[in-house]
Length: 53
Image (cartoon, rainbow, N blue to C red):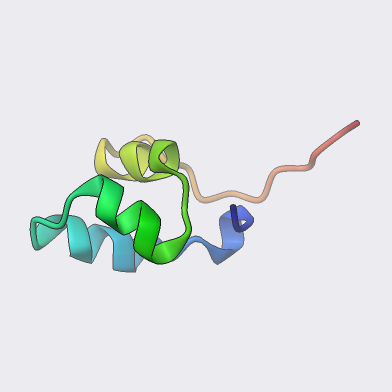
């Protein structure tokens, strides 16, 4: 999955508004279904997060 700064949020919202199914968007754009679901429900926060190992 692409990092958060590469997820095309506006494009995903546009496709959702047109009635394209979340699963189709996930396959087309290579973004996980859970991220698309979060965007659809307004829970996706567009911030860069540091990953610690």
